[in-house]
View 1 (cartoon, one colour):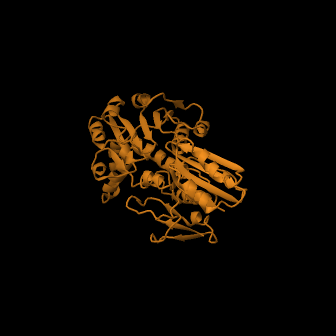
View 2 (cartoon, rainbow, N blue to C red; view 1 turned 90 degrees about the vertical axis):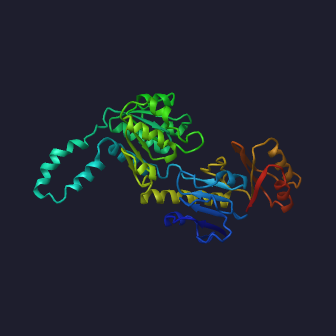
View 3 (tube, helix red, strand yellow; view 1 turned 45 degrees about the horizontal axis):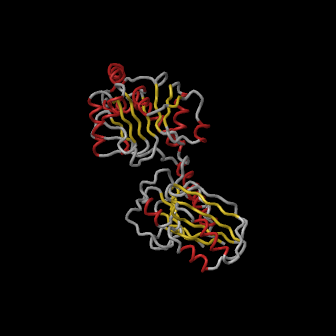
Length: 389
């Protein structure tokens, strides 16, 4: 029986994938959990119980999870890329329209006319020109980041008649296949900054991307560019943004992450983090997170981990040994030798690495004694060993 701790409200359709015969699902953090499922809860102040094997984030971003700390403790961190892609795509397309036509300002102005009775229609016709804006058709949009969301945004923008330029130095084969023909691939970000009427950001926040839109980047842009950010607020340097708005370089900034500073800025539309807030998205993320967590706990398979490589082997052996370890030489030799010394056959073995960490699956035809597991655990660089029967 596995214990799974939920740190946020998780859609029941997702938790239904954790059968009552194999799992106890609880929101009591005092329990020694085998796995955690969460959405936005910050884990930075949490103490991890020794029993914890995996954390599954029902969403794409993992900024609320101390991934490095998890890695050193031999804890797999999962996310759910693509599960909320359609929801964020739809919100981004809405943001395109909000950035172009001053719909928000127009609605607010129209509400201010209340009380003028029959004079309102004439007042509307006289004042509506203050809220006019350009059409999307024929304009150029730069899509920075061509993951599941970015690809969907790029394809939809093309359907709206826009010229689309995409940039992603780590474009996956799957993403490339899903991109519509006619979408231009930029060689570098400078091409996006200098040629686009609209720029939309769809990439993770890390040390390389934090503040990626700053003074230098705004200085390259066309006047009256419109920028959309439904990824992470910290991708944009707000001080540089304010200056770019004052210089009429940026005509509108639509962001999904309101702050005190942004809410007081002119030409900024701050959406209250609604990008993935649809019942369909929450269900999709919960289902994917639960399935990935269950497959790891029950079979040791890893899919969509942010800190360890994808590893999958069908279960057809009596016993499975999984090892999370540092990506250093001679580890496989030492692991297999430990089993060979006890005349244990290994019909299947898989080893993959992701940066400084690696993961090994070894299937055995017979039971693996505790002393063999202890020997493997004692190998320098081994972080966690599990036996699954």
